[in-house]
Image 1 (cartoon, one colour):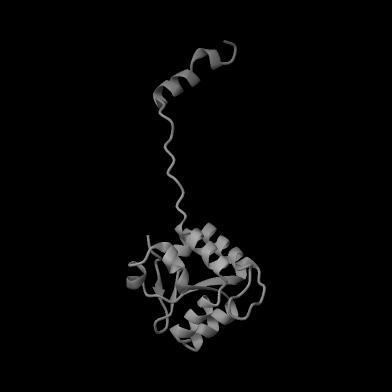
Image 2: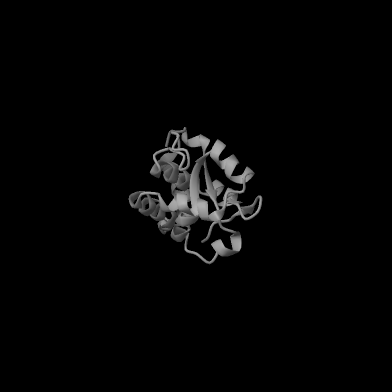
Length: 142
C-alpha cells in the first residue's frame, strides 16, 4: 500500500487521505521526532504538527510504505506553510530528511511498514448462541 497524495503547488504533496485513515501512525511518527518540527526544531503539540510529503502519487505507488520515509517531513504549521508558499526545492526538503538521525529514520520506517495481523473470529454458530441465550434457563422466574 502506498501513500495517497493530493497535489498542491508545483511538485509539493500532502498526505491527506492516507494520514486521515492512519491517525495512529501519524501520532507515532510525530512522537518519533519528539514532537518537534524538523525544520525549525520548535516543540509543538502533536495536533499542531503536520506530516508533509514531497513525492507525487504515481511515484509513491512504486515504493513500499517504509521506503516513503525519505519523502516525508514532520513540520509545524508555519514551516509547512513556508515550504508551500516559497516552493522549497525538493533537494532542500530531502536534505532535511537526510539530517534526521538514523534511529528516528528506522523508527519511522517501522511505523510505516507495520500492518496488524488480521483477526479471525472464533467459529461459532450464531443461531445456536441466540437459541441458548433465549432459552428458558435465562428467563426470569424459570
